[in-house]
Length: 512
Length: 125
Image (cartoon, rainbow over all chains, first blue to last red):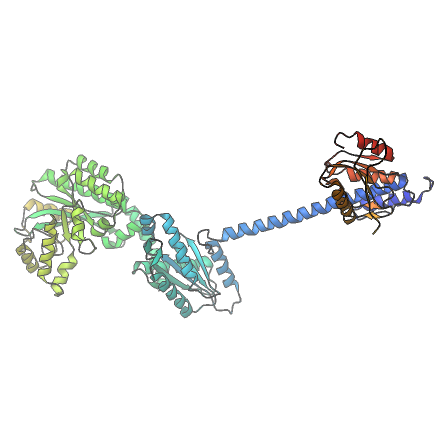
């Protein structure tokens, strides 16, 4: 047995421990044939080193696999953040990033185009069939859009019912071709199980200009899309700079409109409704005007749709209701009006959805001591026909209150007479277009007589608006029509002129 | 490969019956493969019953991790007595026995008689 004092294996052991401590975990030593205590230590060293190496390798493997998992999780999260969960399309962030990449590409490259699509009347799908059905329609729309693009294009869902197609290296012709294909693809009915809907879209196209930011391109495409939506749905509009100006103007007017409602820039004019038999004033229709400090008089056709768009229509409607009813109470106090005299107010479709509408109307009538029967609320045919449960509740409650409900613009919607009978309405105002078509000769008095007969058969009374000539007034009178309204009798009047007219108890039309 | 020495030792007074003796070849590095060959033979002798095992490792070059795993995962042993001679054998035996908890009682001996006596006294042997 070697002497421990000089045993070279001890020096070897020291070397081995040094190597091991420096991190060389593969260090091993050969025990001697002696198999004595020193060899036992060497063997133990080898076995411990092996364990250490193994544990270390295991640890390294674990770190590597955890790092890989972390990296994958990062990639997954990134993908999730860039993907629309419902359709698996790119989302807005991903689209803007890709657009940015396209714009950053070689300056000589052809610029990209962005096509923005917003589904028409998609809210109706959700409202009528539920959000689950709505989601399935969106998925189908996504599939169809993916089917019309080139390999290099990207379809994204920006949110809600808004989609976009990024067309790299585009010309207007290429972009329009894809937009038209998208329009055609969405033109076919979507049938999912028992659900059949049309999900057409309004489309805005923007060909990028050098130096434009992705956000600016998106805004331009969006602006063009809104023009398409307003000018008639299922259309394609290519962005023009004037559209942006108009949009800015609209948004300025929109903010001014809110102020106008609060600061009494609005005023009411009143157009008489006349008894065709003797020219007696049966009532007044209140019509709102906006006297803009710099733009002058703005007509309701211009600002009411805007009020609807910006959600200010309730405020507007209530201003009109309160102001008109207050004025009406002043007239009632000042002069003797006929018992059947009625104030007529227009009510928007959105107003009909307000649960507090009936309370509001009841409160006003009480406050100004107006009998409910002296008030007529005019509601458009479309609002009545497309209304849901809340609208029906409002109508029934108003009727119960004793207020008269009148269908406005009758003949422009698509209600059948049998449907009209089911509605809690008592009057119909026949749209002016019917009389104007009469003057162009495209329809005959016989046709109007038939309509009048149908309205009466439904147990309703009819008022004709847009009467402009004596002949029209005479013919309607001959047919037994009682109520009429139009420039032949009187244009809408200011409060002062209306007061004078009522005070005089004059018959209309006034002798010129 | 060295000769495999696997036998069933049923002789000797005071020795427990049915001891399976596994003798690892001297001077050989015992790999998982060698260990498995021995273990397979032992299983064949045991024929489904639990038997005491005398594992002789005197003079082996080394015992790999895989080989250690084969011995310590045995499901046919009622007890394992590891028999060695030198301090090196003792260190190797303790690495062999010192890992995961073994499925049966295990112990290192330097004499066969002590090993056989222990196997005989083991309650499950």
